[in-house]
Length: 321
Ligand SMILES: *Cc1c(COP(=O)(O)O)cnc(C)c1O
Image (cartoon, rainbow, N blue to C red; front, top):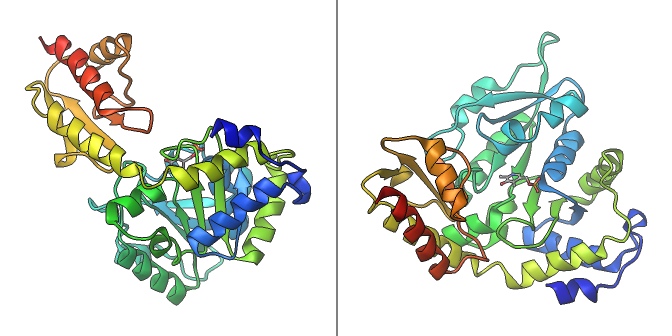
């Protein structure tokens, strides 16, 4: 990847003249089954621009309470776009109940914000893959109600690997899809937003507005191309490692594993008794990092081998001993 970055051919991408960025965008469009794509520095910005492109001020979008765009992106769509979220509870399987969505769509009345968009995630922020048939059902629901459909597909390759389907099976139902290159795929930075030519033209304007137009971005785009070429199928190793980690952690009497095991490359656990913060700082001082406390989240990735997981387990077991 470093070599690909070093050797990348570059130009000015603000003018669409960086050949490496263009190559990445064509590739992302092809993979997602869309006409076009646009490169972004982060997934947060890519989702934000998607929302700004789909919705105007005083429009609203329907979204899960727990969704990344709603909960973990600083309220950007409201702050910068005047876009009102209509959050809703998620079902235990990671989906949004179609009947509930239907009941939340506001009728055309000057009292109400205009419902414009449904935004889904795959995998969900907490690692659940949702099926292609569900996405298709959401497409029909949106078509019947004149809504657009956006996918936060930051982790879409994890979903495709988990469900053993082609990525396009999961993305083709959507008007726009945001894909992270910097998570499991291992690029240093970057996301791509895919959609129709018209959608991407409009998104390019919004990307400029929020300061995401980058000049000689080919160097980081090269990392994205490398990631798409080399780091997708190996995600199954991360999933297998997470399953292994969950199994081994469940052998600790003091821990309970959430959701009956790993979700894609994530494992969630709770401490049955004791002090979560104390446990977290003990683990951190021994090189094992997790986010959250109750439950805490462990994530497996490309730079972790099975032997690293064994080492982490050994260090954690010392705490309970
Ligand atoms: C990481 C992530 C994002 C945001 O990506 P950044 O590049 O960190 O801004 C969006 N959605 C989901 C589901 C994510 O996991």
